Amino acid sequence: DRYEGPRRKYILAWIGIILGFAPMIAPMIGAVLLRVAGWRAVFLLQAALGAGVLSASWRFYRETAAERIPGRLLTLMGRYVHLARNGRYAMSVTAMGLILGPFYGFIAFAPIVYLQIYGLSNRSFSLLFGLNALTGMSGAFVCMRVMRRLPDTVLLTICLLGCAAGGAGILLWGGWHYAAFAAAMCLMTFFCGMSRPLSNNLILEQVRHDIGSASSFIVFYQFLVGALCMRLVSLPWEAPIRVFGLIALLMPVVVLAIWPLLLHRLGMPPPVGISVEPADAV
Image (cartoon, rainbow, N blue to C red; front, side):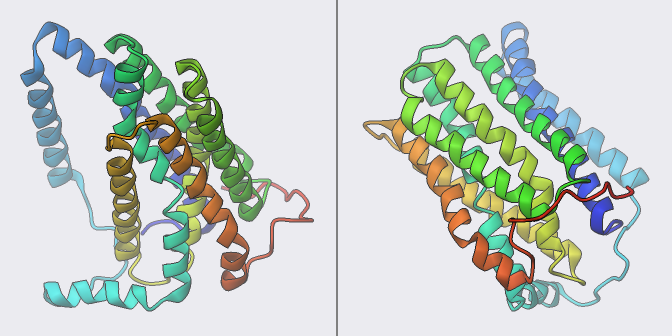
C-alpha cells in the first residue's frame, strides 16, 4: 500500500531477506528445544510468539490502505472477481506463481531425502535446511543490488534459467550424493529468492486498485501451487529424487515457454539487446 515502482521492489527484496531468515534458524531452534525440553516446548514457543505479534499489531498497527472499500463480506469477495477479469494480472500471477512451487515442495521433501534416503542425522538435516534458506536470502540480497542496473525482464529471465539449471542438476545428479542434491537445490533456491521481489512487483504493477486483494491472492496462489507440489513429492514414488527433480525442472521451463507471450501481453520489451541501465534512486 505504501510503495510503488523501484521503491516497492527494494522493500520486497528486504522482505525476502527477512522471510528467508526464519526458515534458516527455525530447524536449529527446534532441534535444541527437542533436546532440552521435548516437543511440547516447540508449540509453547509458537504460541508465545503468536501472542507477542498479536499484541504488537493490536497496539502499533495503523491502516495503510489509501482507500477503504465499504460493504459486506460478499461485496469484498467480489473484488477478487474484478481481479480475475484483469487479464494482465491473471496471466502474470498464474505464470509467476509457478516459480516457487519446487521451493515449497522441498519443504516437504527435505526430511525424505536427507533423513530417509541418505540417512543423515537431525543436526545435519537442520544445517542443510538452514543452508538452503541462506541461499534464498542471498538471492533476495543480490536482487536488491543488481535490480538498480538491469531491467526486470533480464533479471527474471536469468532467474528462470537458474531455476531450470538447479532443477536439471537435481534430476541428473541429485541421486548420486546428498551434497550434489543440496548444491543443486541451493542453486534453485538462490534464483527463487532473487526472482520473488521482481515477480511480485511485476504482478502488482498490473493493478491500480485493490492492492491488498491482489497481494493476498498472490500468496494464496503460491501456497496452492506449493501445496500441490508438496503432495506430489510426498507420494511413495520408486525414484523420489528423480520425481522431485522433474518437477523442479518442469516448473521454470513452463514459465520460460510462456515468458515471451506474457511480456507481449504486458507490453514489455523482450530481454534481448538491452544495455545496462544506470542505478535508480531508491
